[in-house]
Amino acid sequence: GGGGGAGERQTLTLMEFENRRQDAVNRRRMTTLLRGPSLRPVIARLEAEVESGLLCVRPSLNLAADVGQRDNLLSLLGCYNPLWLRLALEAISGEMAPLGAAADDAHALRKWLDKRFLAPIRLDPAARPAAVAAAGGRHPD
Image (cartoon, rainbow, N blue to C red; front, side):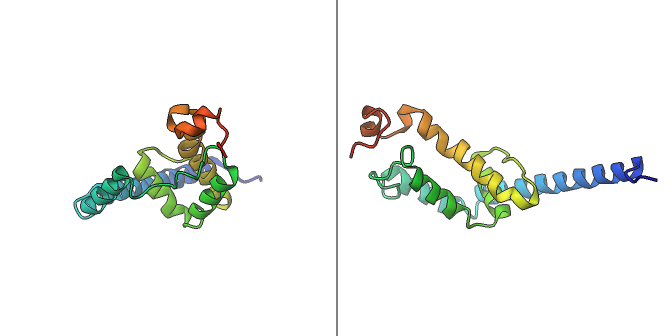
C-alpha cells in the first residue's frame, strides 16, 4: 500500500500547527524584549542618534540607485543567522516575514528585506535624497 494515510497527514498538520505556534511565541517574546524596559533606554538613545543625524547612511551612498551597495548591505545582513534576523526584522517592522524552506530561508528573507525595506526607497521619490530625485533617479555624480 502507498503511504500518506489520513493519520499521517493529521500528524503532519499537528506538527505544522505546533511549529507555527512556537514561532508565534518566539515572535511575541522578541517583540516584548525589544520593546521592554531593559532595552528601552538603548533603543531611545539609538533613535536619538538617528534623529540627530549622528547615525545615518552616508549621503554619498544611494541605496536606491546603487545596486552594488544595496547587494552589499543585503549580504552583510545575510551574515546573521536567519532565525535571529527574522525575529529582529519582524520585531522592528511589526510584520511577519515569509517563511522559506529550511534550505532557502536566508534567500527568502533577503528578498523580503529588499522588497519591504529597500524597494520603498527606490519607488518613492520623497524617500530619496533631493539631489537624486532631481536627477530623475540617477546619482548626480
